[in-house]
Image (cartoon, rainbow, N blue to C red; front, top):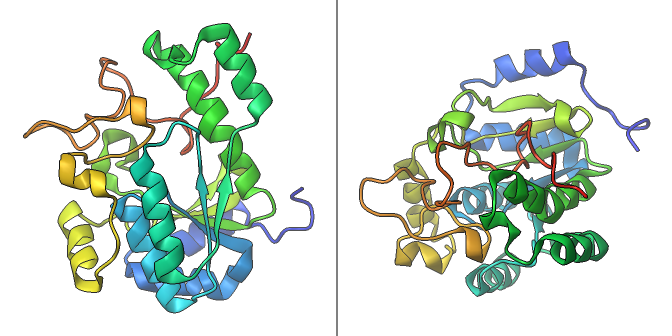
Length: 251
């Protein structure tokens, strides 16, 4: 339900986005927490950017809400760092899982590894396992925070620090690290001794579901390890508004 929420219109959201375009990440998060409080949450898959956001927000408000999506196909290392986060920060991680009936129907009709068969099939798997749980996670919120950066991929090159998320009912979406480099992220990790996913030590630079992620080779794009069998496709799952998410394979 969105009727009783204090959502910004396009013009108000654009005004706020312009005012915070050059603001430090900590300032963006602090102002957002002051405005939305428990009506806002940090979204993380426990990659380094999400861990920086989580650490920053926790230092401002130790009661900050944090959620993640458990697709059911995550590597064990992801569950391990989730536990480290719970122990280190003493916070509840709100976990959202896919609808088991949708997963059952998808796997029964297309097999457990349908994502290797076509881009369309992969996007449907992402839709069931990621996009739909995210929609439930965002229900009742007025804003959410991500760790997206502009230099991660061409599809993210135009994101702003604050933007109205039309794909999720007009919530405010915050990308406080959008103008950070990877080096800036790792500097923060080292400075504050932030817990990191152990797969980074094995050559991973982007970590998602176990069968859809692998280490990259020197010189590869940072997201080359995601869905590496696909050629000339947008390396996104649909969580961040990819237009083709979830189309065409539902039958």
